[in-house]
Amino acid sequence: MIRINLLPHRAEFRQQQIIEYIVVFVSAIILTVGLTFFVDVVTTQDLEDLQVEHAGLEASNKALRKKIGELRNLDSLRQDVEGKLQIVDELQAGRFRSLETLAGIAGLLPENVWLTNFGDKNGEIQLNGYGESSQAVANFMRALGRSDLFNHVTLSVDKSARVESADVRSFSLAFHRLTLAEREQEEKSKVEGKKP
Image (tube, rainbow, N blue to C red):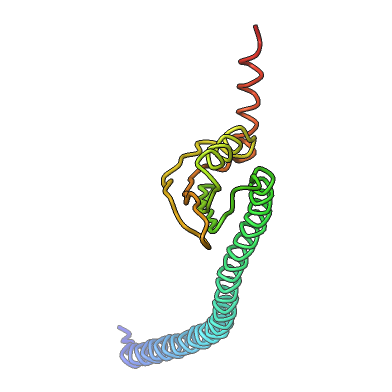
């Protein structure tokens, strides 16, 4: 009978298997380290790109905040200018309204009536003055009432007074100045009232 000694062959096979396991293990470690290094490089690059992008967005955000602040300042400045322009327009309208009012009163003022004070608050007019007689003051009131510019003429004071050794009547009148729309409405109602 022939005897074959397989022990050295097995030992050799086991050594070869151990070497293969070690090679696979070392290869796996090298591959893992390499893969980890690659992922780290890619992640670091992505992080740097994100940081650059973030810095750009922050700078853009800062510039936009500055522009928004400027726009808010412009908006408040625009509102301020519009308010001032509105005041100027109101003053212009008031100036012409006052001129028309004074011209209307001056045209209706009889020779024997003198004015000492004039006030106009939003179309409500106050007049103070002196008249030669109560009849002169009444004529002035009737003329104001018949005018196309004024209505609701009321006498609040009518009393005797002495001015430079002359006996006169001191009076105080209040009446309303008609706006253009009110005048047009009155004209319309007068025309409609005259129709049969």
